Image (cartoon, helix red, strand yellow):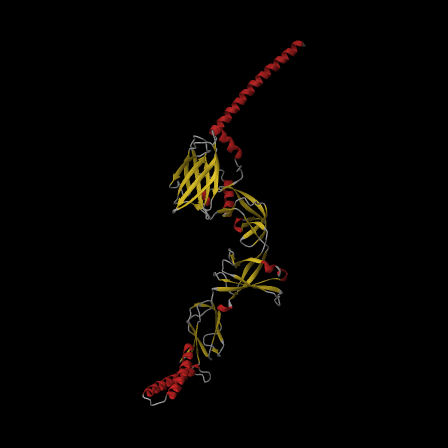
Length: 509
């Protein structure tokens, strides 16, 4: 029994020695493998800087003392996010009072600049870029660290590495080819929005009704006279002739006025010659002159709109024909309207809202309009518009309160048509809002694309509130410091599908 125990212990001891040896060999192999991974793993740092005029997105080797680091920098101009061209760029590395820099006059590709920097000191510092274009300079910088050795740099960036698994790749080269932009959400007052419609009306001061000033038969002075036709000031539109008529014959009136004018003119000129020879008195001369002046005024007044054939109806100011009220060859009476005109420069809008919003109508902060069939909304300020009045009495028949606006007509608003109106109320508290172009709707849910870096995005569901047609209130799902795609969100959505189908999709230079 004793000997068995000794054998067992010896066996255990032998097993323990064998296991320890194997463990040591395994540990040595793991450390060697780990060190080998350090030597061969490609570690990159991402540098992102936003200035007033440019976005910088750079992929760079870790900055290590005495080792050359390659920096691949993408520059996009703001606010249009187009690739930077025609500029010289200088990249600098500032650490511990030591500066290394390299200037590049031409991009490797539009918007892409390559730099090689070899740090001379370790520690915290700044990576700076200076852009010169068209005689103007712009400079921006971001904090960086220069390491003593590559092993330290590897562990630092390994710990800080952002998990991009599941992120949507949308490279700068892709975004430069389309209408694309990113921005931080806005923090601003955003009050309740009241949605309604408004009737487009011509401005009374810019509306004109042409009338016949004599009785007679109408004939068109313009071939194919139709509604909507633009007409110029002084242009003849109609002629009203009373030829052959016994009463209210404009031709007879005109001919009589012309004959009387010519008679009084001849009498005055004859009296003036006799007065020079003192054959007639000054009193008789003044009487003749007075009769002549009266006849002249009567004739010239008729001459503006009448001739031997009758009245000519002319356009008072450049405008458009709204309505033709008589047919060619129709008989009209003196004072009868023959056409209405409207200048298209300004319009009046009449909106009507329920009486329960009467108190809110005193708190309107902004107004947005959209014509039927249009995608874009226009603010009242953009159209040089103004709020004219808010009704204080309920309209009979529909029990609604009228609200009147006046704006320039950008060509989208036709008199007589209805337009969408969003009345935005005053608010004293700031709220998180995003442009409507940033939102993607799917099955009643709304999403935005949050930027992880300028080439990777995360699809995020958000809870939305009121919208004024241009911006939407975000109630949940997004924070003010998260940058989102504001233009081209649909294209990023399509890129998500493309990336999921192509495992090799991504950023290739």
